[in-house]
Image (cartoon, rainbow, N blue to C red; front, side):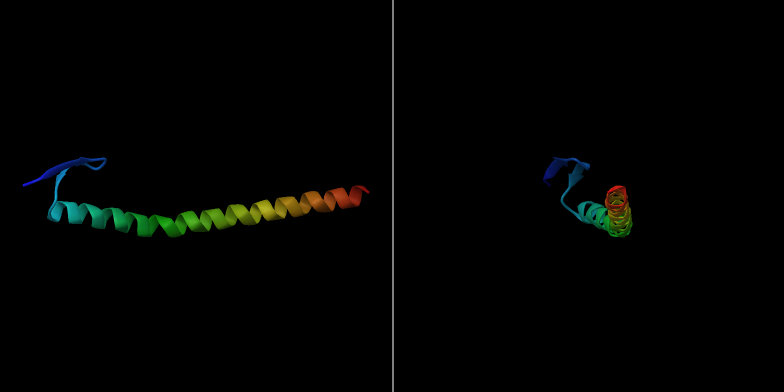
Length: 61
């Protein structure tokens, strides 16, 4: 039986490896939409901030 040392630890190429991959995939599937939503929210706030700066500069003239 071959053994491989990876960032996930010492594991064999078998069901344990498949289960670990499935767990990582499930965690990624759960967290990715939250990360994307947070990023979209931050981008929208940035757009509003830049718009407010442009309007303030325009009003100053």
